[in-house]
Length: 192
Image (cartoon, rainbow, N blue to C red; front, side, top):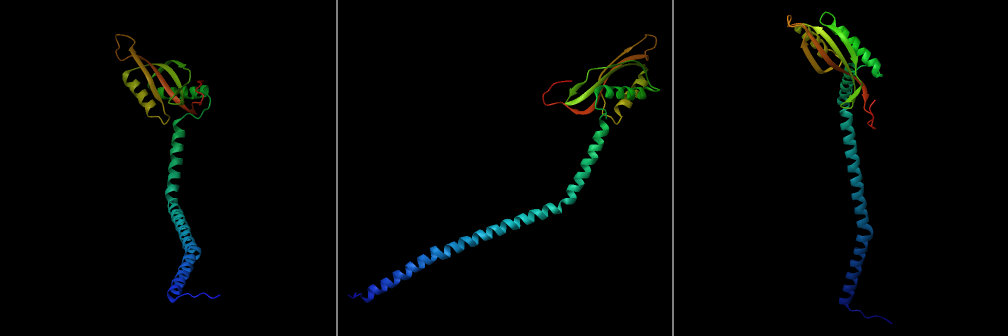
C-alpha cells in the first residue's frame, strides 16, 4: 500500500513538520535556556548590589568610629551629671555635703532635711530641703554655685523672707534642691 501524496500535500507536510520541530525546539530548548539566563543575570545583579552596599558600609567606618567616640564622650559627661551612689540615702548625704561646700563664705545653713526620693521624668530624684540665712548678695552667690555645678541640680522651690525689719538685707530662705541618681523608674511603676 502506497500513499499517493501530491506535491502540494508534501509541501504542507514538510512545512508542518518544520513548524512542529521549531515549536518543540523553542518551548523545550530555547525558552528554558532563556529563562535560566535571565535568572542568572538577576542573581549577578543582586550580588553586585550586595557588594556595593558592603563597600558603602566599609567606607563609612570612619563615620561610625567618630560616632562611637562622640557617644563615649556623651556617656562620660552624663555620668558626671548624676550622683555615683546607688542608694538614695547615700546620694542625699552626698548632696548635703555638696551644699555645705557651696555655703562656705556665702550663707549659713540653719536646717537640713532630706525628703522622700521620687521619680521625675522616670529618673530617681533625691530632694533635700535646706534653710539658710544670708544677705541677698550672698544668697545669689550660693544659687549661682548650685546652678553652675557639674552635677545636675534643680532648685524646685525657693521661699525667702526678711528676718528683722531693721535689716532688710538679712534673709531667711528655704530651698528645695533636687539631685539625680542614674536609676530609671521600674516598669511596674512602684515608687520607692
